Amino acid sequence: MKLSRNAIALVCAAGVMGMTGAAFAAVPLYRMFCQVTGFDGTVRRAEKAPDQVLDQTVLIRFDTNVRGLPMTFRAEQVSQRVRIGETGIAYFDVTNTSNQPIHAKAAYNVVPERAGPYFQKLQCFCFDGQTIAAGETRKFPVQYFVAPELATDAESRGVGEITLSYTFYPTKDFDQAANSGSATGAAG
Image (cartoon, rainbow, N blue to C red; front, side):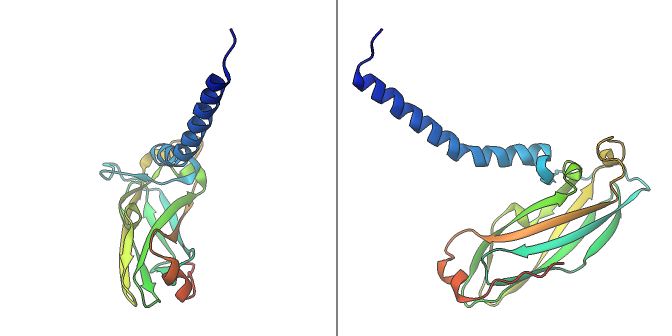
């Protein structure tokens, strides 16, 4: 069967459009996969805390970073020790050091990666974008727990320390704000 030039051009154009669409869909699909499975240290969102609290504890360390924003960002505590299954709460302070509002979102992950499926958040400022007024300082809570399954999973057994890391990045309307001040992040 012989195809005409027009048919070949249409097939090629459809192939290019399909590959372009797949490329744009890859990032959101990968992000959704990581959030559902905890893959690559991605923290999972939980609807409720577990019923079981173990005597075993884990040390949670907090790390804060800023990318391209005129703001400071720090954890009020460098670390917290919580029992596995117990709900913990941590507070983070964010200050917009510019004279314009900032629109930002915090990306997050945990290390070691194998703890990702078990570190879960009930409430977090990172679930939604944030708007911080010029010169404003805000306190953001994070309510979390480490699922009891961490203690029985052969892959994650022995994890005694987990680092929760956040990075704030601009989401919109940032050309002027990002260029008007210096970006600083204080490691918490």
